[in-house]
Image (cartoon, rainbow, N blue to C red; front, side, top):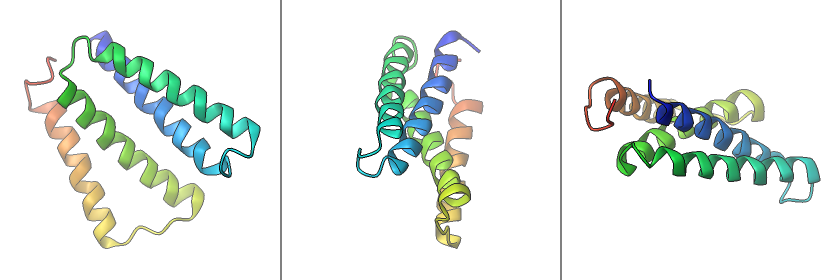
Length: 111
């Protein structure tokens, strides 16, 4: 795994943390979650920019958004009591499958 994929992984983690904090920031009225949101998104986009030096933008963004969607949906379910019906679970499964196919079988990502 080259450094760009590590940057992308950390960017995804930072974005997921920022989005989770955004949920509890109560419209940016709570200072700590609001600060976590701003810092997390800043770090996420900085690391995504570093990622794009070597990973094609389409691949990086597909992995970024797919992994983020799956992670946030699971966080919403486990921590915020959001309901995932069968269609949502199938959709999340398809997104996860797409990310796996890109990472395991595609040569387009440069790894």
